[in-house]
Image 1 (cartoon, rainbow, N blue to C red):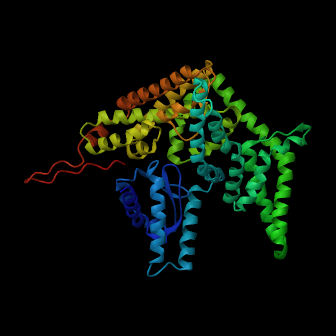
Image 2 (cartoon, helix red, strand yellow):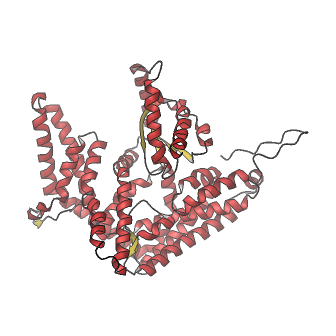
Image 3 (cartoon, rainbow, N blue to C red):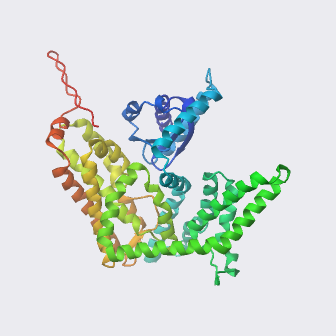
Length: 491
């Protein structure tokens, strides 16, 4: 049964990350199980990578185990259950002093590696928006289906219902952003949501700020983000100075009042201007420097995925979707996955006698065609080194093709974020009609596949790499004679 399989995967992972008492936190995104560890030294990285269900591991602010879409959402609750069971049955639980010592050591180690202001900011932004991705995908796909039905004139009685379903979440996304922002920055989540709700309240249309009438939704997710952060700081100030007996009354009141007034008479206007500037810049960038801009964006996206920083782009995508109904950046960034697929196919043909690696490629390619690049990144191109660079070259070529089309007037984007590769086709929308939009996106994928393949086939390997890798890692043993030499590990 699937549940048994997912529980078996969770049970195999748990001892390799130090057991239940080594787990500080558990979360997951679209493809990764994210674990907060108390003692990093207890993790067996090599054994984890060897598990059939594990596609790779990444160490960042959390220890991230790549399991793939769908799988991670099913394994995570089983993993959480096993952790809870293990803690309750532990013969000698970890003491508070031990936890404090482990936490201090871990904090110092991470601080030395990752505690730059910019990286900390990007991680916090990702933590705010990653939980919203499932709703963004679902509503985006429904919006795309609704667009098809509208253009075809089919099921006119269903179209309004689909429009309401698709638009409901997006119309209130500021509230969810405010809630998650306050939670991430250490405030009361519902107060962050309450302040952010002001932005989408229809009654703000009656208010004048900076000599202009406000519009519901002005500032969008950027305004909600800023309003909730301000609310957290106001709340923390109140907690320090308001007497405990009055805290339950005064703190939430002052938090909402002060932050709300600042949002209405400042943040909504400023965030609205910033959102408009983002949309204007994105359209200008692709209209004037389309090919070059696409080349840079498509070429750099795989390294962002490798580092887990690509999720920091979610606010930009969301802002563009709020403004024009689609994000022009996502189809270009999706070309990075095409370059990765082309590179993996080239590796498959360049190493005909490496059965283990070819099996990995065959199992990961379907996900790669659908835009999930992590299995190919961590299972193929990144361990090999040079093919990762040539995959980026393929992504740059595909991005340049799509960017050039934008520059020539075929502007389009995705109505949702999350899907990529072939899965993005149903979500595409633009100004030049569906035929031109689909043709340009398909052409970009083809260019990415082809250039990624050719660059990897001809430049992805040195002679020594081919000599070392183009053998079966587990050749058949003979009954006599010396044991065959083992193939070097892919590092």
